[in-house]
Length: 244
Image 1 (cartoon, rainbow, N blue to C red):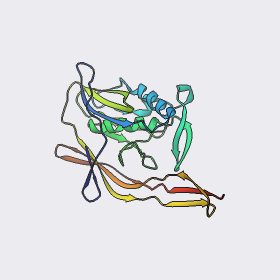
Image 2: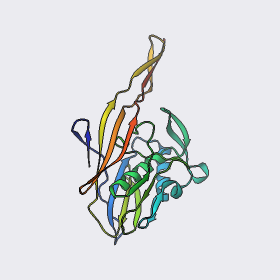
Image 3: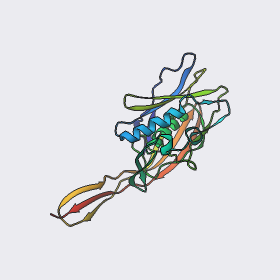
Image 4: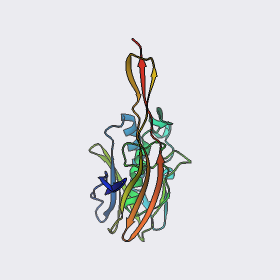
């Protein structure tokens, strides 16, 4: 996979290589994202959500809902409180990290040719996926939904391996699957703000993030479609100064 950034600059995107499927089936498409920089609780929640997806069968023309399959991200379901982004600030909430599982699933769905029915972006672009390729979920009103357009059933498989979460779609036959790429139309740099005293010891309260105006395209044979167009604001950098 490649991404075209700005005026023709091409960069590589993280993607999923084909993995071995259950005997008798073949991997249609797969995608993976890194868990290395995630907290222990975020990794736990991502793995727990993935366990509810594994083995899910989607028949021809059938619709799949992440929220319906995974259920609530609550304590009684085994989820832990973990960092989630809320208006640019990290707070602990139940199920933090589940969105990485839904994002990984979303990208595997794109690559396997699924018809996307509902996908929602985060307020700020997450670091574990290329711009415009995230899929936020929140039970029960923010969902990821797609439909199987193939004339055969597909099955969702996945695992945690080598510090990465992997989701793959498997089925009875392999086809030429689409290419998915991002075009960054505008890059927005964060602004640094200093709070506190004029001089003294400095502490970075928020490292900030770049913002993007980005479009995502999928090309299948001679057909090109715009999957999404998103605008992510830059998250400003905040430095706190304490006088001596």
